[in-house]
Amino acid sequence: MPKDVITTVSTDVIVIGAGPVGLFAVFELGLLDLKCHLVDILDKPGGQCAELYPEKPIYDIPGLPVVTGQELTERLLEQGKPFSPQFHLGQMAERLEKTEDGKWRLETDAGTVLEAPVIVIAAGGGSFVPKKPPIPGIDAYEDKSVFYAVRKMDRFRDRNILIAGGGDSALDWTLNLQPIASKTALVHRRDDFRAAPDSVLKMRALVAEGAMDLHIAQITELHGTDGQLEAVSLKGPDGVTQIECDTLLAFYGLTMKLGPVARFGLNLHENLIPVDTEKFETSESGIFAIGDINTYPGKLKLILSGFHEAALMAQSAFHYVKPGEKLRFQYTTSSTSLQKKLGVA
Image 1 (cartoon, rainbow, N blue to C red):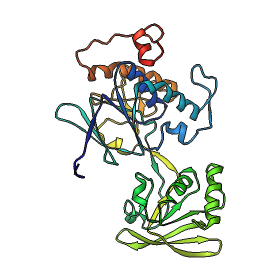
Image 2: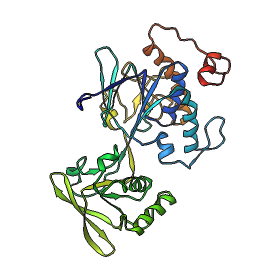
Image 3: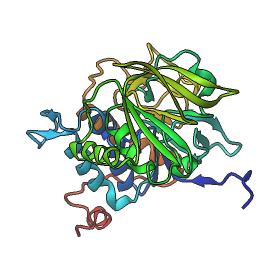
Image 4: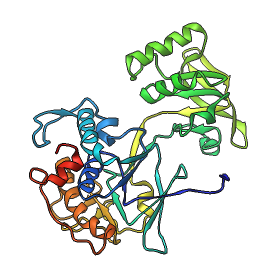
């Protein structure tokens, strides 16, 4: 297929955000035979629960006196598994437009194109976006030789890579890219890492073998022309040094912003999306917002509130996907057909 031909994937519902509320929406929509594709900028499902608080206990999930963010994510993934949701992770929902036949077309920053009659925004407080390092002139190098995420590993094959950061992302990509890069180095401001101990041990073993370099320092300056990196200046305990590299991967953490959702043409109130409390629909027909990203009178920013919103949203989404069909309300405890869908009949 020619490279300039973009394949559009059609589905019933596109869910923007794969946090707990987005994952539960998969279950509620699946009970109604609605198929979902999920888009999330993180490289794994779970949203804030999995990315920022995986071991933090949560005490207000009905029926679970205590559960960690990671455990809740795993249970929700298992609950939605019978409906085979498709995930597009490590991608930001960038553009949204209406098609001639009345559907919604969503394009991500990775070039994925999805179409569906229904969009569900379950993006929590917005999109996680990378924190940019405070290095003068870094904008000129972005997406050319400076990157904040790895979309395709092969893009970095045979590169002279400098990875900056001390968390799981920095250490994971150091270990994953080291075998395919021509040269790999890690820079962190202190000789203490927030990543998994096993990853740190593996990194130190590679350094001891001479298979990669470790610099305890901070990046102060980038050197190159026309956006192509050639070297960086590092300031460490022994002063300023300069090392050669042609690629910088910066993992300085994530921050929350509404991001491209703000450009979707929806009515906004203080960076939140107003919805009704019957369907949780936005100002645009066929676009719903559930979870912390929406607002309405009496709104409580609780995961269990998002679960309730997902259930009511699904009832209304059904009529967009299957207009003219009658929706019969059923209980999972007594419906044989629902139990068959869940694989428990």
